[in-house]
Image (cartoon, rainbow, N blue to C red; front, side, top):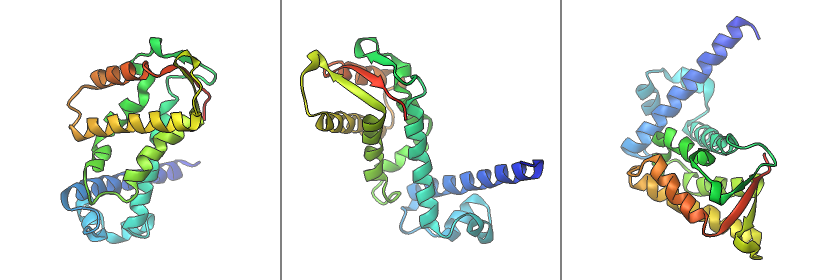
Length: 200
């Protein structure tokens, strides 16, 4: 890649980030359905032609925003682990929950879950992403190896974890990341003996 190409791709990414940021802020301000491309470009200080170089309409921008944030969520999970690594819940500590740090770091985006007229698909795809992480990336062992329907077990734990995250976001991240993770670890120990990270 030439220097010019790398500069232009950096610029393109930066423009897209500015447009995404504008979308997030405007959803909080006036709701998703009433905002227009004009609002987005005015907020981001671009002209409409710049917008249309990157996106056909606000729907495409919204989808790109949601896809990139949830992909980032899935990618963040494996950071503390190597494939094949087995972790006993008695030894769990904060870095095991990189997903929580990711959500906190991008809290400006994840706060959109609190709004009714919000990013389309967020309310369904956010919990589905957590379930996908549990299904694709981990093998769980129950306490005392109690036999359970593992598909149900993963749904139960994934949606339980999502419920805790939702509560944390709704309460404006009142607990620190450390406090929140400690609560999650304490709860995890009640039903999961160990998990193995199988990678993506």
